[in-house]
Image 1 (cartoon, rainbow, N blue to C red):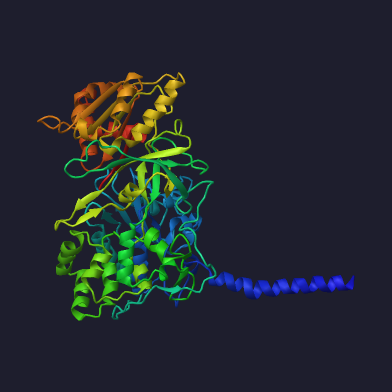
Image 2: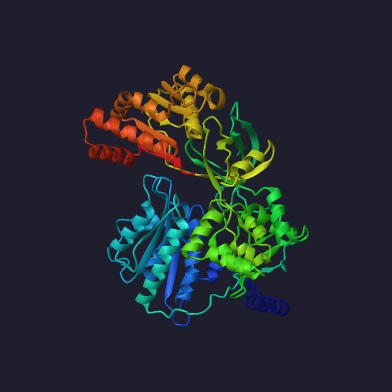
Length: 636
């Protein structure tokens, strides 16, 4: 018995020693960057918490840049993803900067939704944020109807909850020069914030200090996949690896500009994915192999190096930097899945490159391009932006730049998912999901050919190959009552969600469910070239799934005809359907088509509703608030 007791005591002592000296040490070493950056007082410096809501990565990039620059102005600053911050902790903060993007038609980004719901809660007291100072920078696109909806709402709501504004709300327009908008606001904001908090500004040469260092001494011998996947409820951090069931060309003729529009079907059997027609399919793209090899050659990465498992660690404290979807990765995965090799080179990248230019003239030119002088802005616009030069293009122009891997990773933007309107209904396709993809191809002013990262990636995929996907749910859905009239306007690939709608109505029709009226407006260049899904739409007319089909072939006659012309010709019928509780949907180009259709609709409301222009706008806003006027549009 005594031997047993001694054995138990020894086991307990061993466990305690292991836990204290080994387990805790291991956890400290692998603590992610977000935990490492938990904000606290540092040498008496005031705290600045920067919370970002980002959908495409731009807000995240701006937040990290602001955090870095704020340290030069005497702040202990940190950038945090809103999804990683507990909203109820907001009242305990002293100074918070919100960098928030507006997604879609005035919606919060996925990672900001919970935070948005928290501050929106009407039960919050008006002094909830008393004692908190704040500032807001919003990101948006003026081509969208609800420009800067989130930035303006955050600024208004945070102030209503008792917080004190330190500096005016900033706004960046992605349709113009959002980087310049941010730089101008940031420089003024930091000066103002420094004056409010009486911080000491560092007056010193801007000496570059690398953010990361690489660690090849990792336990994992092989890394089999770039993402942690899920078959329960796939999301951005755990996408599903889907097999391509179908990838077909929809155009009968590519035309003189070599167009390509694809119908891609993905297998989701056993994925846990649930979707409705009108939701969005997120695709995680891959960089093209030849581009990856070109970067490898320029950076001096060998075939052996690219397969080695490694981690990034912060230079500041040697802690693990959770920068990519996997903490342990390979350079092959980084170059193929994580980094946007095609993105236009940012000024931050040029500035970092300048530190590694051995040629003095090249170093000076890079710093000029990265700077904010008038000459630098003009040259950056002409040399970089107009020509869509990526980092590889710049490295090949500035041959003396010898860029280490750690700094290359730091200066590269992350490769973001691309969203496509789902072109199927789960009522007919329970185990698959479809997308309509217009392959992006264009030439710069000098004639250099460029193409879209994700659309060209999908074009390369063959049946049986795989892609990482998940679904983002939207509010762009058919009415709950199938007898409700619907009007759908979707030229070109804008027809995608309406194909899902038609499949959903077809499924209900087969079950004998009574359907309301359905007007479908489609537009393309020529019937012989790009009348995609024409057979399906015409068959839907025969089965009464569509009660009226209007197609605008813009180039099949001398005078061009567009969907807005067809809508105008049927404006009285549309008004009557709206009076019956009808829903009006638009999908496609935000810059021209959606605005033109809306203007026609407003004119129709004025005419047949006997309203002034202001009353017509209010009427349409009312429809929008009731989800009876919905848009799924994009600008590109």
